[in-house]
Amino acid sequence: MAKVIVITSGKGGVGKTTSTAALGAGLAMRGKKTVVVDFDVGLRNLDMVMGCERRVVFDFINVIQGDAKLKQALITDRRLDNLFILPTSQTRDKDALTREGVEKVINELRNDFDYVLCDSPAGIERGAHLAMYFADEAVVVTNPEVSSVRDSDRVLGLLSSKTRRAEKGEGSVKPHLLLTRYDPGRVAKGEMMKVEDVLEILSIPLLGIVPESPTVLSASNVGTPVVLNQNSNAGTAYADAVSRLMGEQTEMRVLGPERRGLLQRLLWRTA
Amino acid sequence: MKLFDYFIRPKPQSTAQTAKDRLQILLAHERQDRSQPEYLPLLQRDILDVIRKYVEVASDQVEVRLQRGERMSTLEIGIELPGPRALRMSSASAALAR
Image (cartoon, rainbow over all chains, first blue to last red; front, top):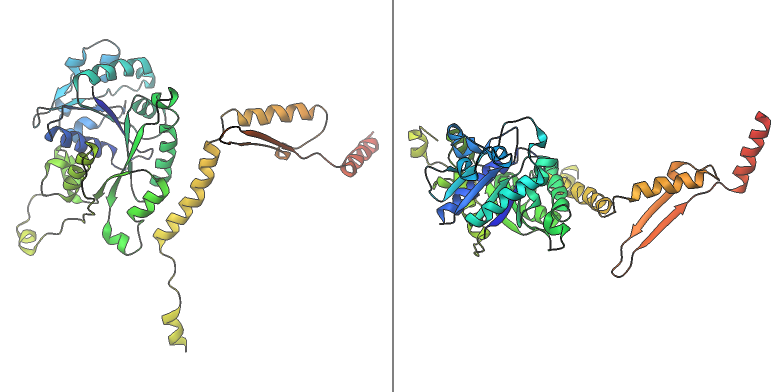
């Protein structure tokens, strides 16, 4: 039976899709059979970040509407054979995602996988609601910035009231905080809230601290989850987060942005 | 002396600290609103309509608050009615208009 985890935030652009791709690939690297599911109907992007956009034939909506079997829509990752992608559709029909349809697909995935990661769209509308509705746990992606923290707080309220677990009285969805785009240099100067500040405000357990890093953009440029880059501090931070998600005790490290040595800078060609 | 003042003057609060303070104040309010059941605004409107059948009250003069306790909750309804003086004045002006 899989664990269903929603990657959510409320606010857009904080790194949900990047984090879904990185955590999914990280879990697969650790031998867990994992599927990443794109819930952002109309604005699909997980396929691009995962680098499989040209292999999409059928999608989540086709499966819900009975036009394709789940096996036909699942894309196997070319790098990790434990990793699968369920892309979403680009339809503008917002009602394409139904609760019954999502439930059927999630239940089917639960039987076949160890982890099902649901990449939520921004906002608190239908797509975001359905992405969190069947979840067992939630990764709340937050930037150390006022609007992101406020929206995360709102999302935490929804996780504890508008999910199946909450409605059935089975306890709330277990939340984890993933702090992204963290810049220790600016924190030291008092220009950015500290990890401790955000934790004090949101009071949920910390899954990881991902530093602001140029490797995140270069990874998405080429469609490789950043966790596969061993030389990236962001990749290392995601790998740490993955082990915590699996229940291991890993020491919390605050990694800074990568510093290149003089020689590296002189020889630096590709990111 | 001026130079000395410069060194002992407290540093202005960092913007990060301001962000934290603002969030803590705002979220305390928002969490309170969120813990209220969804029917509360509707209940407030209905109560107001009933009272308006008898007395003229403004919409901001009715306050409905739910206090949640461990074993029981209390619904507190505060209605500010116009005093006898205000009533007398309004009936007098009504008589004048007539």
